Image 1 (tube, rainbow, N blue to C red):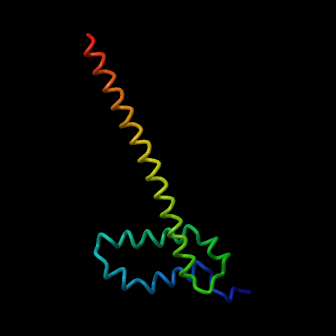
Image 2 (image 1 turned 30 degrees about the horizontal axis):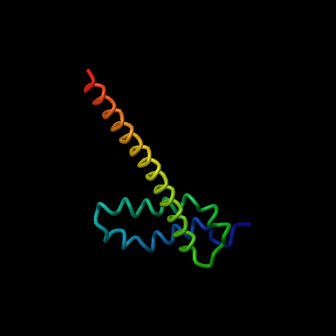
Image 3 (image 1 turned 90 degrees about the horizontal axis):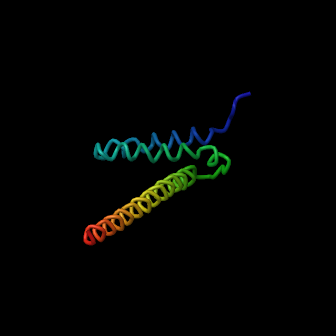
Amino acid sequence: MGRTNPTYRDALRAIEERWSEFRRALRRRDQPRFDRLFEYAREHADASGLLNHQDPLLPALLSIDLEQEVRLDDHEERLEKLEAAVEKSGEDHERLSRCDDHE
């Protein structure tokens, strides 16, 4: 016997279809960003489906938030590494300058 209840992925697809007019009205540069948000929601569809929430948009929004948190963490980590590299570079430059002054 087939399923009588739609899956979470079906519900998410229906949400995306309902928002298609909104997507079309967005500026061209924002449309890929909009699409990315639904990719984030699909990344967590298994967990969202287990929740079986009355409103499938809420788990989708939380999934989007989770993926954005991951991106923020990645950016913060990269920034810390870059700041450390710049600081080390400045220290190396300062040390070389002092060596040049003693010659």
